[in-house]
Image: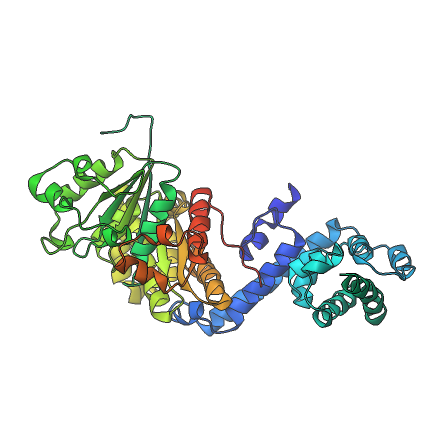
Length: 174
Length: 308
């Protein structure tokens, strides 16, 4: 926390608290860029205060803060061990637990997966806990699994095949 | 009826530039939600167009602020039962005297008596517009709430309202510390000073002297407004609250909190017509849930988490 006070201005620029995670900083950065790079209800109504030049400058500052914080987090975040990748490639039978384990080894928060894949978080949770009853019909579930696997840099087709076998087995047994 | 010296009520006031954005609905619902945790007195400060009672499902009370101004009845004696447990109502006045004709001394007396009301939460619903009586009443509050809707007209009015609010606070703070007229004079001479907008005005004032800079930083660092976005229909609408908050922080230097959003519901106006408070008629609706989240956020200072 002590180190973070040096970055106070950058956290403030992205309007997130000092104790935020990188994931939160990343989201805030995307949000700020969206707010100030496009005309929105909020910015159109304030044209007298904010010129295009103001906005350009602000976007520059937002970028600067994000870069500074990215560096800060890089220093403090564990580096992905290449041996992890070897470990994950050894897995060939994919159930929810396997996917979760791989995700944890890669230090990827579930929210990140949800954001990047646009798969609702609750479905990702159901996938990881093999809660088939809570998942949508097969065609959707397969799509979700494919997207999730791609995000983990896995062989998406192989993962989907393995995962859906278990899903169908459950379905047939109903 | 007055509270002991150790007890202090939390005063919340709602304002906002535009009429019809749902200030009274939000305030009445917030009051009902707070009444589950403590004693609430709601004051309909819409001098001239009081209608808060409609949102509580009751008829206009016979006593009102008019009795305070014209017959010198103590404020505490004018609070009537709203029919909802723990919730008292002090209604405004309609068609007697407008907000314009209230004298400074009367206003001070009103403010003093408001602070002494026996309640955990005192909620003041204000009329639309930027009349200085409205602004001053809002500045009295511990929590200043501004209601907007996702429409340009509402947002533009809100920025204007915020400017007025900040400007008035700036003026009174600097006057109180020996810089009478500084704000007004600076604004009057804005052309020669190269001041074209609000942000430049504040920067210019800070440049007057280190002392003035210090006063502004000391007195206004805790100046915060709670934004409530009403009548949200889409995720985009909900996001708008976040964008407005960001603009307030970055271009007004005002600490804005996005305290909550309330989803649009056609049943609001129906419940008013049926004389049943919305929260009673639809206790499990999404709109009611929004009000409940808003209540918690305003009390704790938490904000809407925007998920994309």
